Image (cartoon, rainbow, N blue to C red):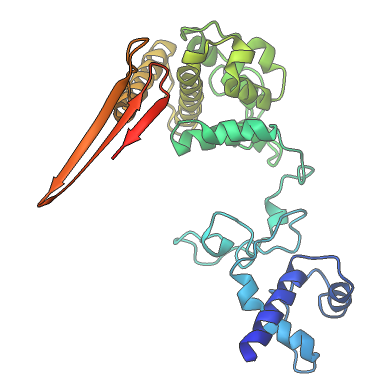
Length: 328
Ligand SMILES: [Zn+2]
């Protein structure tokens, strides 16, 4: 009976935590959860009702699977609240060198005026991005660029005041404000790299639009640039490597004073592209299957013998790759 009660309380606690619009939830919230406190953080009180004590007693069950959906972030402590879906227990792990964790809410991390801003890409584009056959690091780069959250000088200038007139200009050309659009699409280094591609890529029309348009174009290059279908994967790899190179070159210049040279940059990106393509081929080798000539069928078979036991399997396919028979 006790476990049944606990199960019932856990279900009620879940309804409470997930802010379901129910009369009893509203009543309890107005009585016990004032000033934005959630059920997971609510203090215990001996004088509380039997129902409320039961909810608090079973909130641990809910806590294991509850992750806060961020809107304003005003009442969400960044260290103690569960708010990051990909982290263990939905909480960040403080840097080991940090003696004292600064007291911050998620609202402190949100750029003013940008909470709740609409997604820069359509849902189909996000699926394309995360489905790219690229290293996770490169896909995360595209994700950050799409959201325009890389710490470019233009972005930093939103938070930091500087009297230095060249503090926020492009580190490569010392020209305009260093936005991601300028760095990736219209600076001298980027133009040299895009021009080195085997495709005729014009970046100028994208440089005047939000950078997310450029990411959309990379994800749909057949429509955006007329890239033939067999070359789409290679193009997307090239485009991502160019952006990765530019961002790393920008960091090396700002932090270590290393000036990149366009000719060397082109060679390095080309070398990296070939390295990735070679790795692809090695990964793809086991899946290569050559169909028979038109009008014939092909039989692929395998046999395993172990002691007195043996099993054989055969698969017959036509010249279109259709499986027309399987036998074991
Ligand atoms: Zn520049």
